[in-house]
Length: 300
Length: 199
Figure 1 (cartoon, rainbow over the protein chains, first blue to last red):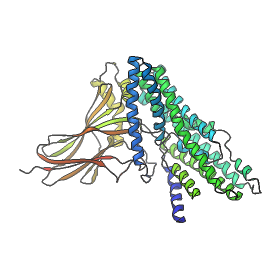
Figure 2: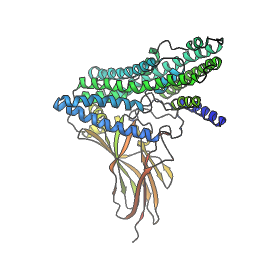
Figure 3: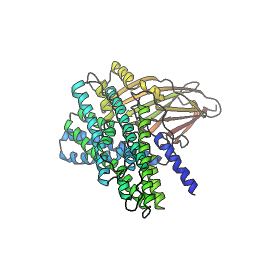
Figure 4: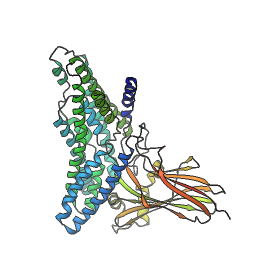
């Protein structure tokens, strides 16, 4: 039984970073590069359902935005706010939006739940802000084709983003490996040893992941602009960011709470607890480096 | 037990595909017309209707005279700017003739239209399969492997043209043998069987 368990563990460990791509728009992007390995289909129905829900929400958002334009009624505004929030939650529930990076990041060190929530929201709002800025730039200043301009800008930002993810991952990895050399095994020093792996700041990883514009927000902004509803577009983007933030935060919080639970299994065994924490730290950092590298290779 | 559960929870998350950007972003209602000729199957006429949000992007980029419709020169620009690139992605169209893959290299008769604020594409995928007295089987799936776009079959997804000389049957199901997007999604597959009608 144990052998089977660890075999599954190793398979996951090996394949997980391979399931990352840059996610370009096929209508204008370069030929896809095979950088992924297929996993067993364990979530087929979930992803199909998520896509279907998004399709329905997308239709409803469109209808309500047009209704708001014609009636200027507050009756359309409240459901629009709620739906854009819900759209954000579901939009980020599908694959992507840096949930795995957020999860791996918190796996690479001890942290607090509030930091998990903060990182999720920071990623989401930066992701949205970047998209809004690009749309407004293209619309009011450059007045170019959205499809190709967005792809060009997005492509460059992706390279910056993925490079930063790799660098942060490497920094965390080095720090984790250095901590392996420390020896705090005396009684009462376990907590101090674990706190060595505390995350000092979450802003760098938030910027690294969030700098890439969210195409979902871009499309909502463009649609609002096409209806001459700039303020509505900004409002929808804000609530969508709030919704996405909730989902991304969930990944971070799950990582922090899961790690706590795991380490609690070693209660009373300080040595095992410290080594468990360090192993998770190295594993999390390695995941970030590998995710980043594969995304970067897919983007250049 | 708790230890293993925690490990599995961590592994589940670590194994999820992370494209950094969530998908899908474009929603397409898809229908297929199966076109026959004197010899047998001639190909498939595919129609895509984009969601209004993505349509607004296409309209902004290509309806240069802002008259709410695409003229011939604008259709040419749509083709060059937001369609021809799909050749690299086989136009999202995957065909098998009697079990053997048929790679879509080109399509014909592209046209684009704006109707009720939605942009639609129509194009023909040539796929010649001669009909004989016994049934031949052709399978077609239309999906975006990158999942940037999600294609949904419409309520009346299949129609036939020039099929009066043939016995035919079709069904739509999930292809569970070839999931896409990191093995996470089963594509919908249309299976057509046809033969020359008995005199």
